[in-house]
Image (tube, rainbow, N blue to C red; front, top):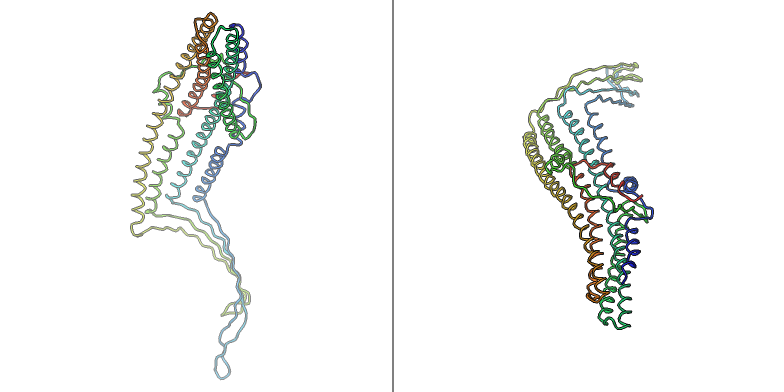
Length: 447
């Protein structure tokens, strides 16, 4: 088989991999997904609700005012004497209308102050959860994006292999007809072609599933992601020292932030429990206006009077069956638990960060090795084709070389995507993943 006949096939395969057709970039899809993804929107709404809780807690330290009013009608009267000094009741109707305005201002409420501090910390937890949700959406979207690209590449390489095998099959049939090859060559080529057809069916289904996953994530159908340029050179992590990434994760990882803040919230819960054993002081003011129509039970004269009251009220708990003191001990134990949870999450994130770091380093080396393997496989294929044409190699050697070449190409394509995903996951664990990182990947996409 003439080597020149395979060049158009390889060129077409490379063009398919680089993605000449237009598609959506990663940043475009991320903007769409932010407005559609249910998990991300749930965290956004939770953050809004937490901000309202802060206002509710602060309101407990502010003044309160109330207005009350009442009206009633009564029937009765005083006993009146008769001429023979006998007493009889004299009945009549009289009514009263009362309105009261009252106000209260907390002066000393340590429990409520601790609750306000807790609410502000919970708001920081919500912000950390929102940051984690944004980063998680970036990673989930990127993974779905690259899964589609890898599946497309795999299908492209299988179809290219089918074309190469079909040409080899035709070549074997011609050689058999002229008597320069055995029927075994034809049957081997036919078996390879049938296997490639089965692989194509599987690859088509895999691509269909991967596309549905991406479509579901962004809420749109028929998404066509742009391909990554073949000229993109995978690079290792910067900084190049793993412990620097671990330090970044300890400082910035959203999960560690949440656990640290939750530990502070638990400490304040102890303060709240201790505050229940302390006095509370409030300033209370009120003004009442009463209007008596047709007098009262003892008088028939209409009256109106107002009463203004001001007081500083102190309340001090004396005994409650040791409930408060036991609550204090409970919150102290929960604070210790929260501190242990911080240590546990820091160790877990640190270990995951190291694994992600070495995964990127290994991935870059793997890409370089696969690139070398691709070149070697191409040389081996060319040599086997030449050997087959002169009779020193058999057809199965050519078919095996073709299979190895296309398999290497598929692995190389996936390894490129894995390195890009490794960078994103490493930055996610370190808490420094931003939209700019997606933009950097966009710059690697084929225009």
